[in-house]
Length: 266
Image (cartoon, rainbow, N blue to C red; front, side, top):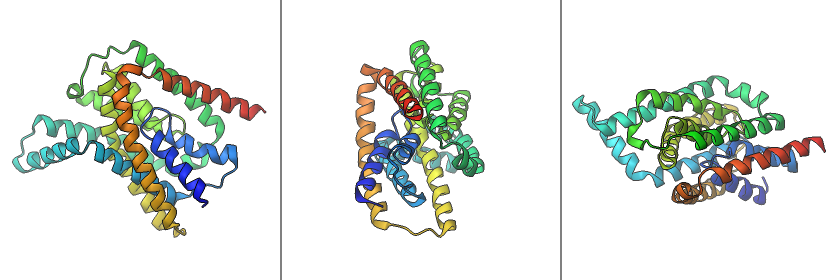
């Protein structure tokens, strides 16, 4: 794998993983538009692990607090507010892990074309626009209930479609449920932790089973770049989302969909 490709794809993964614009679609586009060879399962695994480290590092205080609360609840058999919230996050992550495990090979074979990416990019951009315009934005992170957690978790299954965006669909559902932009974003990022961890575990399992050759240098560089860029992107996004809203990301998706459509025509 060429070094320039390693740098570019790792940066794409880090920047797009937590923005509502679909990292999976952006990682596929260089192959379709520039003729780059597929980066391979090993590299995908490495950059996703880098993104996982980034979100855990950014939310380390929340993660430690929720983990401690779960351990105390298991020991004392009595739930606290934090342990209940942690359980809701775990429950919200289950649907995408189940669907991803059972359908991942079919998705790889059937949903990686430009046509799918174009439709998903535009449709889910419009869904985010509706949610941002009409969501009440009155609820906070602590207001997440079991039903809302399940709905957000179910919506996350759409993220298996390249172009849909895991962050985008979970933020869309949270906004529709009345959460503020900041709360919707934080819930989306926290739910990402078990979801990305589970997906990474599946990728590692598939990698071991495939006996594919591994470019350890590309994996190491990709993981670090993806992690650092993802961390900075989360920080910047949360600092700006209340003031800029989701419109810039919606417009970007619509323009991207239009350009990809033109690329197919010409």
